[in-house]
Amino acid sequence: MNTEQKPTVEQVFEMMRKTMGAIPSAIEKAVTVDEGLLWEHLRSRGYAMPTEGALDDETRTLIYLASALAASSQACIQAMANKVKMQDIAPAKVLETVRIVRFALATKVIGDAEPVFAAMAPEKR
Image (cartoon, rainbow, N blue to C red; front, side):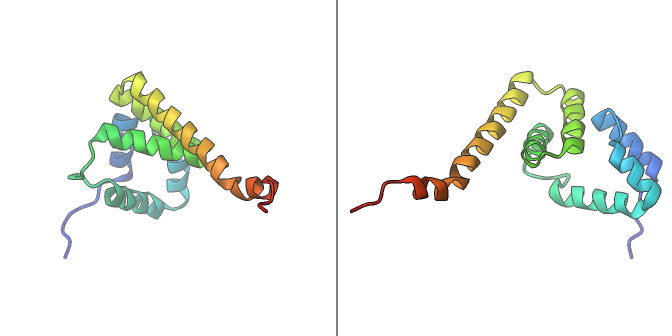
């Protein structure tokens, strides 16, 4: 039997304020509709980013930021922008992360266009 007591919503919100500077508005709104969404979100966070994980917090934030940018997730981009500020991550690291995402997306477009390039290529004789 699990005797560990889960934190209250307010305790989770306070942790978010300390680590991200603010509570993501989507999380705040979700809790008013279904508190279970918060607990599932925390469970998923623990699975993705365990306390004793292989990556440090700064690296995790930069990876999360990169993923949010690539997925065009405005809420997550804002949350990670806040976290970057709270963690005082060097601007050069953040800019390099943005540039890597930009390059990856540009490379994706080239890769996605392969059938177009093939259709335009002169036929081999």
